[in-house]
Amino acid sequence: MTTDSIPPDKHASFELEWRSELSFWGEERERACA
Image (cartoon, rainbow, N blue to C red; front, side, top):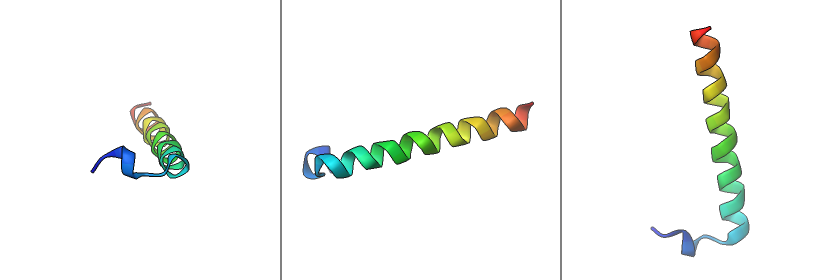
Protein backbone atom coordinates (compact mmCIF):
# COMPACT_ATOMS: atom_id res chain seq x y z
CA MET A 1 0.00 0.00 0.00
CA THR A 2 1.33 3.41 -0.98
CA THR A 3 0.59 6.76 0.61
CA ASP A 4 -0.32 8.04 -2.87
CA SER A 5 -3.68 6.27 -2.64
CA ILE A 6 -4.53 8.15 0.57
CA PRO A 7 -6.15 11.60 0.23
CA PRO A 8 -3.83 14.37 1.54
CA ASP A 9 -6.25 15.44 4.28
CA LYS A 10 -6.73 11.87 5.44
CA HIS A 11 -2.98 11.27 5.46
CA ALA A 12 -2.38 14.45 7.48
CA SER A 13 -4.92 13.51 10.16
CA PHE A 14 -3.47 10.01 10.33
CA GLU A 15 0.02 11.43 10.85
CA LEU A 16 -1.31 13.73 13.56
CA GLU A 17 -2.89 10.80 15.39
CA TRP A 18 0.30 8.78 15.00
CA ARG A 19 2.42 11.58 16.44
CA SER A 20 0.11 12.23 19.38
CA GLU A 21 0.05 8.50 20.07
CA LEU A 22 3.84 8.36 19.98
CA SER A 23 4.22 11.31 22.35
CA PHE A 24 1.62 9.76 24.65
CA TRP A 25 3.50 6.47 24.90
CA GLY A 26 6.77 8.36 25.28
CA GLU A 27 5.35 10.21 28.28
CA GLU A 28 3.96 6.99 29.74
CA ARG A 29 7.36 5.34 29.47
CA GLU A 30 9.08 8.30 31.14
CA ARG A 31 6.50 8.26 33.92
CA ALA A 32 7.03 4.54 34.45
CA CYS A 33 10.81 4.94 34.61
CA ALA A 34 10.66 7.89 36.98
